[in-house]
Image 1: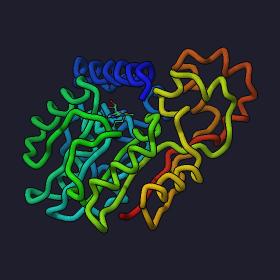
Image 2: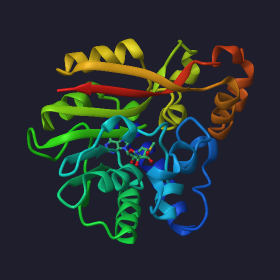
Image 3: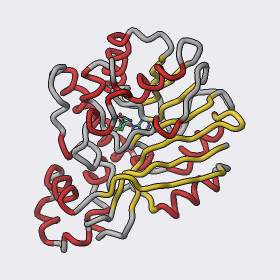
Image 4: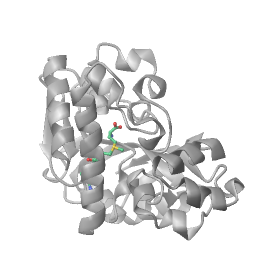
Length: 271
Ligand SMILES: C[S@@+](CC[C@H](N)C(=O)[O-])C[C@H]1O[C@@H](n2cnc3c(N)ncnc32)[C@H](O)[C@@H]1O
């Protein structure tokens, strides 16, 4: 990954983690700038999923849908969450796999790992481990994981095929991929696409459904299903552009271009 984008991503998400940590009782304060929508944990997840989770885990949610609904987690399973952030999906998964299971959260940003470990302690769970590392180079052994989850992270990678190959490598035979991610439904102008702030906000790096499917297939996955579930309107895109200080660029363009151009999607596949 080029240093500039990686550093931008770490700084951007590190700042969000710090805000949540400093303002434990408040929301993350990032609104539409989180990950392409104004959704927060309590909107993305129905009550039964987030019940009992620390408030900081819910308010730090930066996802684009709830990947755990796809995962069909069973007691005793091992799960890895790519780009675990404040840990919301890890803590939800830990309830499903129970004491005999194990959930790893992998993230490269120190402040996010600190927040995730705080949330783990507050939850009192014993079957969770947050590890520092890159999703392009997963620090786990081959065929050790039953389910790989991820929420609004793979779009941020400049080496998406490496991420998917790594996910395939560490999954056991028959293992499942259960992901929520942003996909591009129609082409947008290059000045928005190439803008680094739109990249760190999960927009510019989004793949088309065809391209996502092709990379999954190349990585060895089968039974691939990619389903848009949360299509972004021009109003949502406008608020994202404004939060990235791109309001001027946005207003010069025909906003209908953005209407329905991106969506939060479910991505399912099997090894
Ligand atoms: C949009 S946030 C999503 C966090 C979490 N999945 C959620 O739903 O709240 C993206 C997270 O992925 C992490 N991240 C981004 N790129 C990464 C990479 N290449 N390797 C490891 N972590 C990464 C960031 O540090 C950040 O915590």
